[in-house]
Image (cartoon, rainbow, N blue to C red; front, top):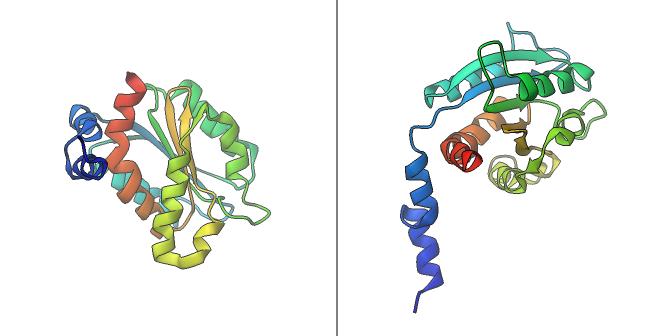
Length: 187
């Protein structure tokens, strides 16, 4: 008879189906696009965009595109949709990571513009992100509407604009799981 708690703990420790999938996915690299959503940031003072790019590159992924667009704008939706449909001049994009516009203020429209583009929502991403955020910011974590999903073969993660939130999402969730996500997408 198998002990269910044993199988769950062994998987978390590096054995079992999920660990095997991660081993099989090791070495997969993504072509990424980074999008900062802000009415006030420029390339000169944006902190989240460069942080996303540097964390992805440090993990061995390529950042093929980077842009800044205003909150609650058609440019936001059009940029994400264009990267999904057309990639960039030298090829498709595997991952789009955005920062900004995920709160509840009137101008926070990122979720409304990106969510309709997703074919498959990764509900667990938002749930895990808010759980991890709770450890940093307490009950204010409930204000985040961070989402993730798959849109026509491109993974899209919509993050809050704060560098601390960006770092948390990339370090704890996106970067460690990205090769596995790519493997599952390609199966």
